[in-house]
Length: 202
Image (cartoon, rainbow, N blue to C red; front, side, top):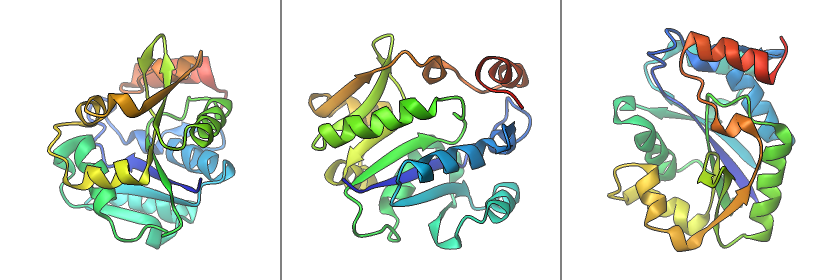
């Protein structure tokens, strides 16, 4: 299994009041931390879907040294998360050796590295399935999709990823996890302070 990573980074972060991707996290930013985690876990190719008009995320990617060839520009970020996912599925720049794609939110730096490693190992064992972590019996992000499922996203008529996955529930292999970071939403300044208190030290 050779997996590529899609980091979704085109959201407007309206409730946070500033880009969640650029929040400080440990020795870097939320985006930098997530990118570093997946690189360390053996991602064949790590790509970031960003709003075409968002100069701040582009500047952060420059600062991180993220290759221009691994950036996916979304010209219609107002279509939401599923629009960004479909943008990635339609993109022609993927490494042809990729067999699986991991779709992850750009605002979940609080998920433990060990949880991410376990998910990758789970996908190795269940390579024909769509794999997700589960917290309290509820499926969570990130999601790992084999090639056929990932490519189906490009022309799907589903309204969102949840609906797309529900249509393929027979193919989903959940991985039980006790990681509380899976169940935490980083949406507001208060959430950010709580995340710093619970999940990391700066």
